[in-house]
Length: 106
Image (cartoon, rainbow, N blue to C red; front, side):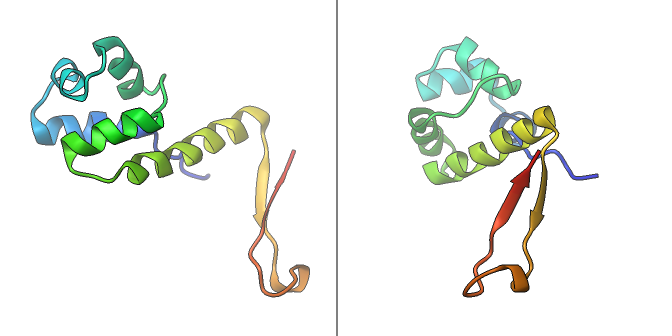
């Protein structure tokens, strides 16, 4: 069985908050966000926007792209579980010019 993709909130909850010894409220305040908004992200009910990614990067010393790169995998993983999609990677005989292509089917 495939592993569920990590949501950015899980990383914040399980790594960033313990390592920085900050509470959700404190980190939200440092990012200029409401506690409610930040709590939704940490509890995996909210998403990381471009603005939030920039704010987080400044506080935790990462790049905004790091947070944004986590977003599509979390969304795609959720979508594929909800719609029971399957994926497969086409082999070389099915491709042109050695390209890699991911095929999604329902």
